[in-house]
Length: 135
Image (cartoon, rainbow, N blue to C red; front, side, top):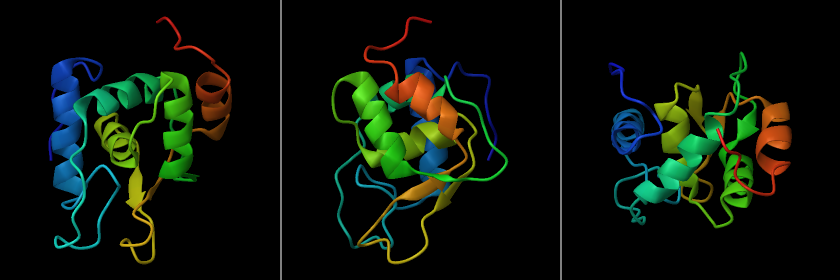
């Protein structure tokens, strides 16, 4: 798996993030990381990935994954002013080089992941901002 010199916030960056995430998590859908191929899930919306890339690019990495993808999804959704999918947040995190680990347990019931996003950044830069930041 190689990383290219693509701007992660561009349309090519969105495609790159989706490709990297699907290489890493074979059964990634909008719901999250599915445990099996036979569990259907909706496709990931590239617009959701673009929103998540923009939001997560404001956050720092930590040494160990400690924040759950559902918490990130809520923060990104709040910042975007609309609901984004868990799968799009996972794809964006992978695309930005965050450490993403599948959540332990039965993925059919809880297909989330744990990510090394700095919790203070989520609180201050994502949840604390009522409208998207101008960068």
